Length: 117
Image (cartoon, rainbow, N blue to C red):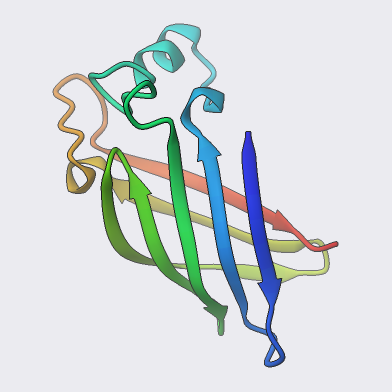
């Protein structure tokens, strides 16, 4: 489940908060999905949500604070805007969030789409 509270300001820049329930994450492999939710990775019991506080979206870039696994980091990534909304594809190094995986990729790719309504 994703809960977003995003709004455009008078200058056309987007800000707000996006919260994702970790238990709602999925992959194309059931065993991998199950493993991602254990204490060996996201630890969905101890850290049930991941949150991105959007500080600014404009001029092709989003900036904000990502909190997952109890760690908050400033991040920025490129975004595109078309008639359907904003989209982004970027990488996150999970070691920076205290997730040290020996048997999985430590860098994961996220793809995000925020439709305009």
